[in-house]
Length: 153
Image (cartoon, rainbow, N blue to C red; front, top):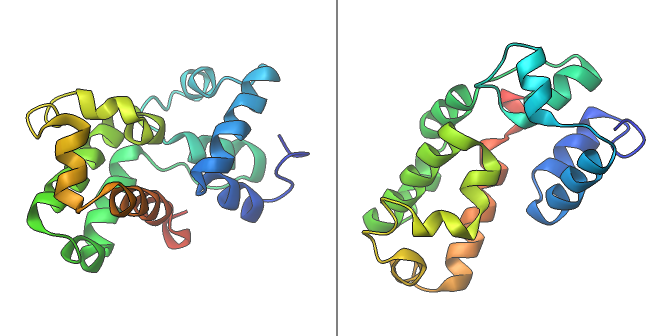
């Protein structure tokens, strides 16, 4: 892992960019680094994957997904208020999915097939709430970056 992300700043950069995070996770799996196993070994089942990696590689503190989600709600009120109430409802529901399954669960397009998104019209209904696919994509990317703000890492 150190060869791919030689320091914490690079890990943070890779993790907060969904386009880089996917290949990074695939590289870890190919190297037999399974984050779920690390969580079990460290007795941290609610820990965020990023925090587990940062802890093991760089001695950073471990944060739970609940801590990160709570910090997002507390520190990102302006971001939330920038969005229409219906879009905000989606963002908060995505945070709940993150609490349960981590950023991979939240970032997967399949999440929109699950409740409560199914009741919101699945992906087409979610896109409509954001005023288009690009504003939705932008909000999801920004949400992921803000979830891993450096002050809470």
